[in-house]
Length: 287
Ligand SMILES: C[S@@+](CC[C@H](N)C(=O)[O-])C[C@H]1O[C@@H](n2cnc3c(N)ncnc32)[C@H](O)[C@@H]1O
Image 1 (cartoon, rainbow, N blue to C red):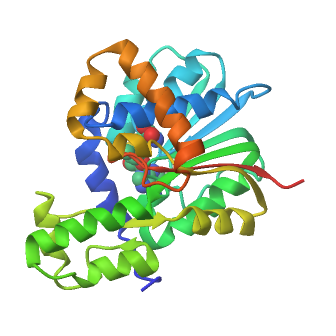
Image 2 (image 1 turned 60 degrees about the vertical axis):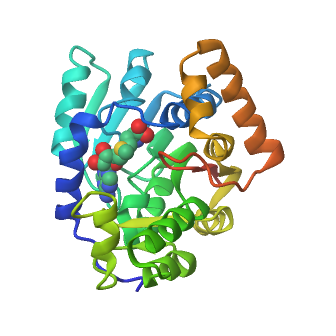
């Protein structure tokens, strides 16, 4: 199953269709974003060049360019790039490149001080996700920050959906447990599960546990300085709690602090947020 082919043209179309909604934050997405910003801020000292892979409409790349960093924004979706370019109009220190995260051969080894590959460009490469990680490691000079789909959360999602649509634990549930993989064409009845998400197609997915991700990073000659769930408290709290927190800036900031503490001290291997990739890793090339 590991070699199941990813149809990247289909994937691109899928992301193109999502481009206009990329900036919209649902459920606990804003908490995931703020937690990522907190981690990024810790690694900006001494950084000049930044590569963001799967940078979409520029939620991170554009503010970083506005702060003076020399930013390269990579995405394979033309629609995402179109919106990002419009938003970055007038900025001279950001370059937009259309490329697949699994092939960054346009860039030399160790060519960026900081590499961000967050929320999509690894996980949605499905069976090619390890290759996407390898490429991001290769081009990192100082620090790589990755967020990928959290296996614990994906198992919960598939287990719930499977019983909802079929009253059995479908093969897709076991494939997620055993291989961390979802591909639409993996099993005949997978279409039932995508219909449940009200989409005809759901992109290829690869999810990792902390241990699995750590091993891959180490295999790519990286030293891991942080790994674990991102925003698990937000996932475990009731959705009403999240709604309340989002309406009050003071509560929101306090909640983000609590989420960070929960991830680091209480449940380091938790499921992460419901929305957006809920497993974070920070790694540096071994000298
Ligand atoms: C959910 S968005 C995340 C955007 C941004 N990184 C963030 O965290 O806000 C995922 C982005 O990854 C891009 N993407 C997915 N698979 C990719 C691949 N194989 N190569 C390049 N970009 C990819 C999509 O086009 C989309 O713009």
